[in-house]
Image 1: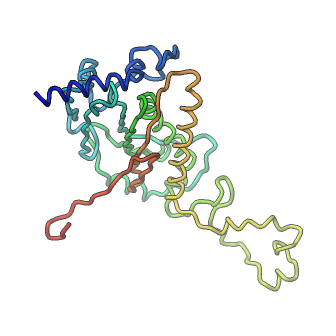
Image 2 (image 1 turned 120 degrees about the vertical axis):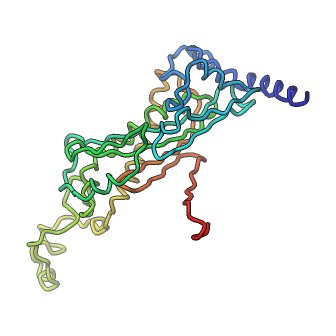
Image 3 (image 1 turned 60 degrees about the vertical axis):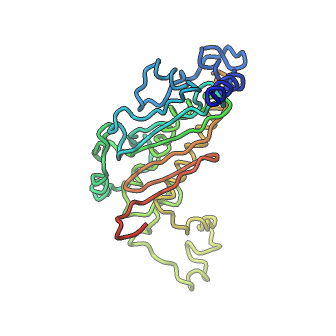
Length: 303
């Protein structure tokens, strides 16, 4: 009896607290807005839910736990489960996505000599049967796995938009550096579009005596370009990927802010993404959503 009373009160309070959140799914705007939704509300696509099942998932009394219908739908035996937070909002405001991204060279992007070893390294990665990682030729670019979670608040609009579009921003940012990443044997240039990070074999090193005499290229000579100390810093390939992910987050945030004037995008959200690219795992987050890594070991190795 006490449990039923508690569930009824939670369901009633949830409807009051999330009245505006519920209105955004019916086609009308949040808070009386007549703007259209950017994307219709739904649960993650990989769950494969029908519209009736989506409505049932919002039951604050039963609170069904949603899991994958097909365990092989996600790569690497990825597991997923969700349940609505009773009494917080009418609908589940959180979102998730999982895709295989294909990154192709953008027109005008930096060209680098292909590294044949990278294709061999990619072929050793495990593939999911639902989302296959295809081995592309050098002309087609490269592929990577992408997972994302978004913790929505004060409405589901921002989380829905981010779950649909953030992966496209990640792909766009990686396009600028795809040719450089494929050649792991050579360090990237310090400035994209400028000189490579390694000096030509026939270049002549300026001696101290020539520098003091004001030779060509010596400090203070007329032909010497302005000093650029940052060109001495070596930039690994991983830093380029990190920078691309940071730029993707920034562009996604700017797009949501820009499109609020044309679409009903309610609330906000945190973001947590994991990208497996060229045999390495990259994790990026915004807000208080975090990720922990655990490595399974045999009993003889200990925990």
